[in-house]
Image (cartoon, rainbow, N blue to C red; front, side, top):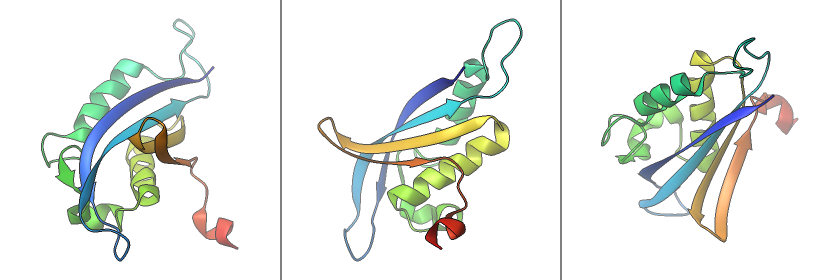
Length: 127
């Protein structure tokens, strides 16, 4: 059994030298698996996940939502789509160990870009 939760956040970033500061609506999908609860048959309580998402998003600059991600370079690294996905993975995985996948999309319907991260060791993938 797998369950998932999606959330959106608005944020600005730049990826020099390719783009100046601009913003996106980001859509994140968190997928959980593993052993299921004996009563509810869920691998994670989505109420707990949703409460954590509120913390992760923050409010107007304290988290991911309505912020300039470039200013969080110490936490995220360069604010590329891929690094933001890894950042979300690390934050959520620490709280919910049965996280299996983070998918992050940006752009408008029909013109979407995205990234999927499953916790791979990126150093080994490059070899």
